[in-house]
Length: 347
Image (cartoon, rainbow, N blue to C red; front, side):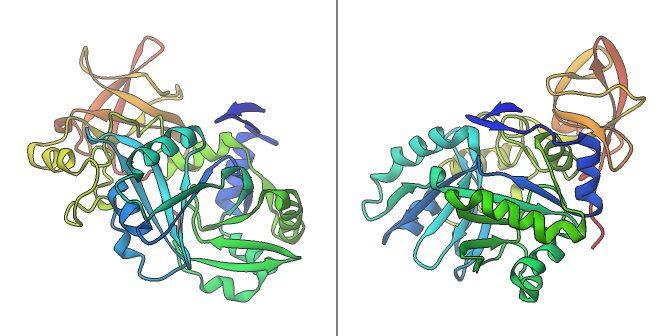
């Protein structure tokens, strides 16, 4: 167990490798109740969120839809990345555990521009469990019925199971098919036990933070504090698709337009290193003797079978095939820029 965003969290239940492969091959169960949940309501809720995020809320045409986006600061850096859910009468913002207080203050600082919008922090009242892997859909069918198979990615639905009111969303952070299930915090244990029971025939296993990190790294999903931070824009990690510069005014727009016109200061790349030594966050990326970047995340690619890393380099060194080295404990280990993601599930 480790401290994580103010929570006591399991790093592993069995072994990282076992848990990682369980999610890739069958189905895993994650407790992600540490995530933050803010509800934004009122006449100006939509206008307020639209001003605070880089993506376009107009994409959520009807309720029970979700959108990945970021809060961007005036310098183009990322305050946090999040999911926005459109519900019947309000919006649900799901933010990172370590940023709950920072995000709350960031939103609050701009709320006075929208006097008819209201915010509520429901993080402490909300549990969130994730069911991820190729057999996730089987577990959810056993839980709430066949209809769940028709739920599209980034769509959600409300259900009641064993008296527990839940919202099921087809979202996740592993690179696999999967679902995230919201419930009242007081129902978390009962819902967990229910998922273990209905998931038993499909081999469901609990999964800790260690495998959560290696799974998301293979799928090249950014982790706040690694690939994203207050000095890094969504454009620099290759997430331009999440930023809609033509949607109207939003915080950070001018700086992102400037980056687009003048070029990026740095660019995120995928690296594969030779041998068995593992690249880790903070290790120097070099060209010859010169440091040209830094690793943001690195590990053994458990599904792909070799060491992998994400890191920032100068944009002119970001092309696939570029030869570099990573300084791993004093040794310059050969590395190559490769296409990302490292792992893509078969459809």
